[in-house]
Image 1 (cartoon, helix red, strand yellow):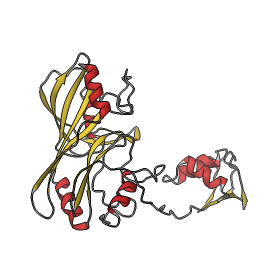
Image 2 (tube, helix red, strand yellow; image 1 turned 90 degrees about the vertical axis):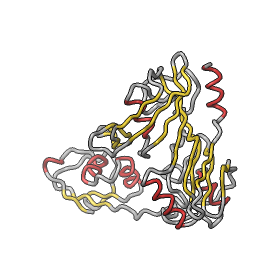
Image 3 (tube, rainbow, N blue to C red; image 1 turned 180 degrees about the vertical axis):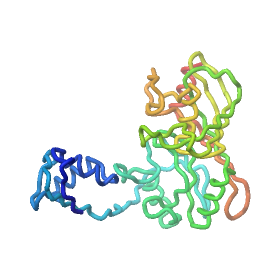
Length: 299
């Protein structure tokens, strides 16, 4: 790419200029390109701090993205259900579901490649084989993985139609007054922070059914049944009614007095129609040790 600097651009740092004209490039990535000598001004390489002058000829190239090789890893899996079409696993905390920037090993996919060998659907590509839905790194519990494309399409359709049963258990800040309530608020990208989700009128329809399981002095143990499956849905919905999840450091400003690694949220029950037999399969993921320990402390 080639840009000629005009008068109104004069004096701007080159590592700020390039992201301003190429919105898909971050400043840190541009700094990397500059360090690797892939950016030049008037035919010469420059530093990230270079100050542009009117008439400067800026040239740079962006290397073609290459998907890294995802290797099978012998990581133990807590398998709740498995057959020739699907496998349901109880994902632990701190495990990313599929590889992404910064997480190319130690993911659920790495473990599945070792366990299932070549028996994973390919619809979502080499980075997400078998993955039809996901949960956050710090959320524990049930994830269904598809072993072939037929099963993948069948389960994906159930997710689209919201017919899969998904019940989560959570501990939230504050004491809920209602025994049961339904939160029906649209969710979309936070206009002020694209890494976060928020309640926005232009967002997608999102419905969460909440049931109180137990009340404590400052917290409430709840079951959240998803009618829809938006990104961070339970976390955003509970925060929107003033009861953010305990330990949630993204959607809550309430500091947890307990040593937690992220939000106290567990995907407990998963129910679906089997893609081959048509039978309704329901799995239950036991609460993780940290969760049961916390409930005992709160008694």
